[in-house]
Image (cartoon, rainbow, N blue to C red; front, side, top):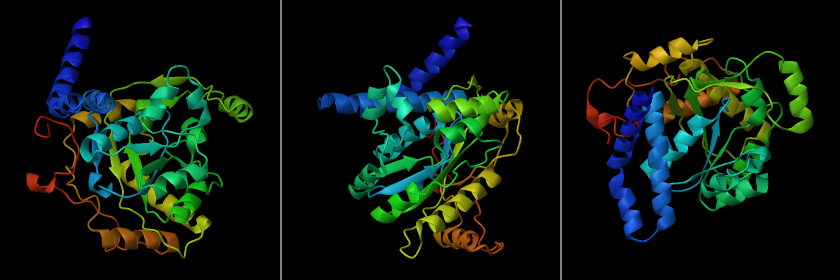
Length: 326
């Protein structure tokens, strides 16, 4: 057992070593906080690479500059979002500010870490302020309820429209995000859900017992931005984003997949997607509008993925971590 720990620790340190130049550069310029941030991003990126074979598909959809609102599905334990924060920082040099539940800032010793990485508990006015300042903000509309009570990757948004109102107020695009197998990595025990639901509604604390930490394959898909549309009401925008995200879940997540099969995914030769998540921006927008309007998607406007047939020049934005990308 100790030998296995030693091997994985060696692999993690090797990953950080490959990132040494940016880390040393920050400390060389006596920017200690920046050096710490780059070091932690490298460690989190390394952990995802080693334990989950973590990849990001569609990094080019994250803007290099300017504001954007990321809307994502909330897994039982959002370790995929920690990995995504690290990858966006390593690849784009940008901090993704995550809106978190108030209870997270009451966990001893972790509140300062969350705040250091830009996380905050709201309210919506603060989300708009950060977006107006040109920052990237991420929200899981389902929040803790989705983490606790989602079944087979169902969205638990209820009637929430706050994120849509924030996007409209700030006039920013919305970027949908989903991570494959995030509920195979961690999940909650299903027994006694009604009792735990009652306890959560009364206390706002996630008291359900969790299990997991399994080394399943995890792949985060970043969808094409849904542009700001002044003609949409918050309700219409919520419906549009929901349908796009549900389409992503249906496309990339096998229903009722077992933990064993999610682990086997790491050893399968799966399609190697290139950096363009959708065929082109036009088709992505057309499919989003079709979903919103309730029309049936045709083959020409359904979001499609482009295979990479071995030409490495077409995969520069796919953030799969291997020796070549280091």
